[in-house]
Amino acid sequence: MGQSSAGFSLEAHYYDGGLKKDNFPNSRPVSGLPAPEHVIYADPQNLGKEDLTFELCLIPSDQNENWVWLGCYAASADRQFGDRSNYVGVGIWMRDLVAIDCRSILRSLSQATALLNKEGMTPSLHQKFLKLESVIRNHYLLPRDELPSGLVGMRRSSSSSSEYKEFEIVGSLETAIADVEAAVLNLQLAPTPFVANTKVRFRVVSAPRQSNPQSLLPALSELFLPLVLSLPKVVEESAKTLIQLKGQYSQLKSDNESMATQFDSFRHAADRIATERDDLRLKVTEQGGELDRLRALPYTTINSQLSEISRRLEILNVAPRPSEAPIRPTKIPRPIEPIGEPSTDTRLALQLLQYFLIIVLVIGIVVAITYGILEFLKHPFRLLS
Image 1 (cartoon, one colour):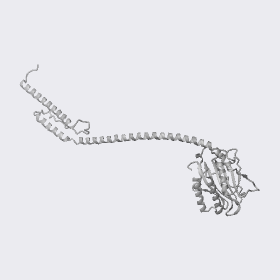
Image 2 (cartoon, one colour; image 1 turned 90 degrees about the vertical axis):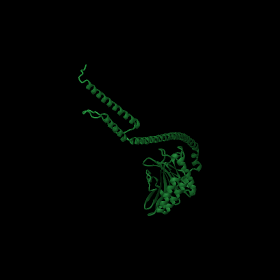
Image 3 (cartoon, helix red, strand yellow; image 1 turned 135 degrees about the vertical axis):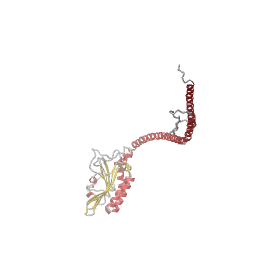
Image 4 (cartoon, rainbow, N blue to C red; image 1 turned 180 degrees about the vertical axis):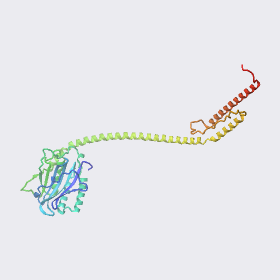
């Protein structure tokens, strides 16, 4: 019974200082139930001491939902005020549900009615009713939407009579339960139920009543005949449903295979990305090591060599002018980031070549100045032509 729209409740009527009504399970009451006045036994004075009456009704609620009532009634007395032509009854409310195991339900309701009539609503009987509610709800019912749509049963319409249609069943309780079972199945599932009424009673008596004769229930063959005749249509509808389900299954299978292919593709892409990530991580590690190596180069040694070259230049510049300062090469600052520059040996060779050219240039200038001085001393007063 896993449908969210389905509703079910077990209800008990008894007299104990007046009419009492209990619903089970009372720990989680069902919303939308019709008022109990719809299923109160209106004429209990007509119930014989040994009579038992089953009742099937289709009753709309205030929310315009169709509820089915299947109950069992017997004559009883008020436990406080005595016999005042009262009754006791136990029944079930069903919404969007069908009683499939009707025989077990009818037998359970008759036994519960007898116990309630005998003991009253004691704590022990209350616990038994809770268990009975659970058994009926979980084992004897089926959601209507799981049945073929052709099995409609009685339904409310403008032509349906609001009066009870009452049938009399003469015989033992077990025989009556078999007959009532066939009638209840007919009323719930037949495309055209055997009566148009939406309120039907089945009075079980040990002998016919001459003073108030009742209609006799049709034979079992007549009750089951509409169900048998509807089987081909039901089978055809079920076959169509199975074909649709098969098509849906094929589509779902195809979609599942497509999703599996996409999943494999995504997994391969993820593996490729993970490999590229590991390669990049390795390259970053290697570049970090190279950066550490470059940062550890002996810049102090290079600066010492430049200082030595500067000292030798001072020695070569033996006659510096007072206004001239000796040329001193500037120390090369330590680079911040050596990545991308030439190697250390190449850079050192270029720097040495640069200073060598500077030395040559300085020597040339000194020689030219010396040569000019010597020429001036040889011809101090020669006029410029």
